[in-house]
Image (cartoon, rainbow, N blue to C red; front, side, top):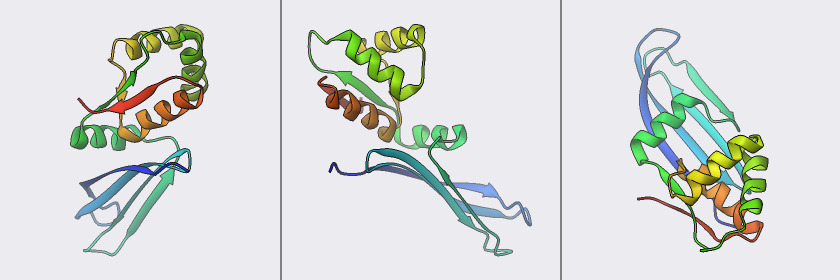
Length: 139
């Protein structure tokens, strides 16, 4: 089994109960082959506890992770990659159609497809599982 890949971010928000400033933690991880996220916070003023989790990363949390850690880029390392295999993996894992898969393939081959470290490592692992040399790398 491959090692988990995790990124976390600490940020401030307003308490929904009393409006006080509270500290929050957000985490996205690639654990046991699945992408997951969670957030939690406790208000020191009123004691309200907030927690959330799921598989589809909320845009606000994704934006915070990218701002704090920077993007990770998907690189296909073989000089003559089998494009059909890459597109098949992209379509299946990203839930996109053929036209969008072609566009993403172009970004991948040009070294321009990026996201959070767990997202890109997930795609790299799926590609490696399909026989394509792929790595997740930070610039």
